[in-house]
Length: 167
Image (cartoon, rainbow, N blue to C red; front, side):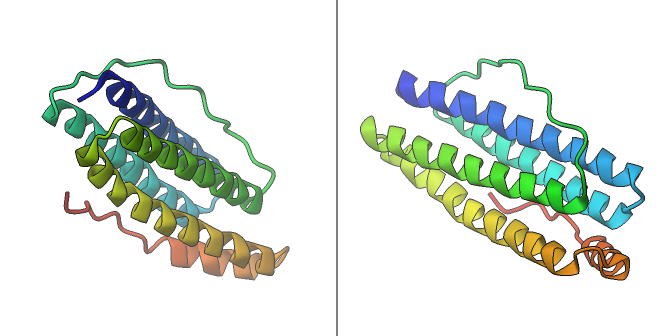
């Protein structure tokens, strides 16, 4: 694996671990405002982002590379509302999509077709992430100040179960 690709993948592992850390902070936020269904949904996100980071970590090692760890930034811990938290998530996931797109650009630049093929899975994953979060944002906007709607959505989100994707 070329060093440029290895370095870019190292940065992405850090970004995925930050995402996991951010979702853990959001889980704590939702627990603190008694929305346990939202918190459970966030726990699934924590697990999913950890999986993403480890998938890249394993790939780097499979290709003979090495991980070099940097500090993980401290995430925010407070939001004005559930809607504000999910709008933050949507913006964050859009940023992650941009990072994945940049990784594809690096793979193409260094002519690493194996990395490009590996990263295609993440492109598909990001489309799903943005769609799911975008739908929740839209629903929270429709709910507005209706607490019964919020509790109904909380109940629905509590049903999420993280299933480890097949590599």
